[in-house]
Length: 578
Image (tube, rainbow, N blue to C red; front, side, top):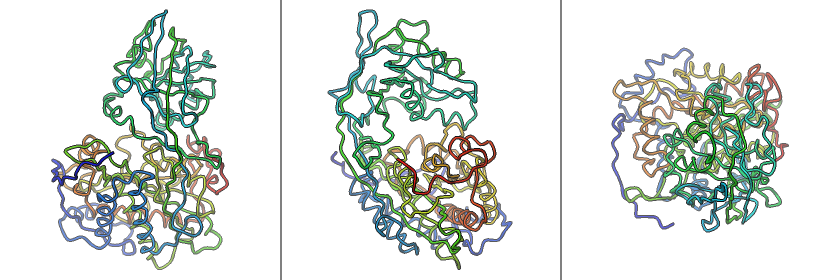
């Protein structure tokens, strides 16, 4: 769409300032047992940046510049950003690790855009029909397998579409979904632990479950709780934004559930229409689902659904750099560092600004990863294991670039661990770091050891209900059996006047996927440089160890994806199927 003229804005966060942070001593100078309190006090002092912090800032400003047009996957702006990162990898001392000896790995995609004239969701009950309004009340999801698709079938309520025998929970018990429309709520029961709740809440898992049981369509029903997290109006206004999937060698979409002809979402305000003629309202059923008591049943309604989609091939690229390990026996084992390069491009103008620059999400993560690469490459010797750095594409479209790389490692060899950086909200100085997901594997000890060396505290995930371990690029590697950690910004204030948790909440409510996520935010580049040193130190720990990381005994992800209790990485060998 045409881009509105850019208007420079000065933003003031109530709980953070633009103070420049001090940088802790470099990685080679770190001493075991460094005092986190002293380090944090130093970082909160307003003194000149050192070169590492300055390099990170320069990269953030370059990647979040208007020239990049928001770095949407498949656009010239994203390609320009990829060129910048390739140059930074070369400067850092990495070798090209992409296709044909270059810096880039081709990522084949399909792009699908809804055509509103073909959208339909009609509820029929006892001879009467009610048609929901496109955008205001329902939105179909793109169909990557057919330009036009339609379904007219009876509906079955399946709770939250979860089959979890280990938790004595089965939403499908006694139900026949063959040839039916599966009607479901999102989320998972509150009694589930955070890990299983996060996994079973994922839409892909729900769609896979109903497709395997013979459903021909699915409808995801919104709730009041959904409205609090993400108002319907906010997602509905972007209905015309294309969706994407990976594409196989025959041009077909991967992970697209072709058995489901139509998948649609219905707003919370229109939810009761689907449950007309039943004994309970949508709100009552949603409450029972949250408590784990939503027994499924055949609905008395017939649903007519249709979707029209324009599908076209697209290509994007991951940027790949390699630091070869020094030990011939371990050099074919890779620690993979990731940060997503893409953002959401341009969109509806806010205060005259239609470029969604993505400074925190995720120019900052890419810049920190590049600085970690520089630190490792500049060390007196490389780690025993090789290191591969990947600025991945299409994270915003469903972790597609990382999924492609995890299944097809451009550098070859075996991937043994993943360190991911995504949207560290460093707008208030902190004493700590939040390593999300370390509790699942032996990486916990490596991270804690590295944190002591760098002089930074380790804090648990402050928002476990957000389930971010399954929502960023590390999960692509987890699904291939590879232990992973997602490094996020800290939550413990280094300055009593500025609280990182409050600052992060402000960002999520006001600037996440909005034009104000840009380089004039008060980013604390000293904390960013510290995070780069920590990432490099973790990589050194993994790279030097005799044994590769392993999943903890009995861990859910290890048992589901890693080949059993205590299993290590073994799927990311370049031989996986798509």
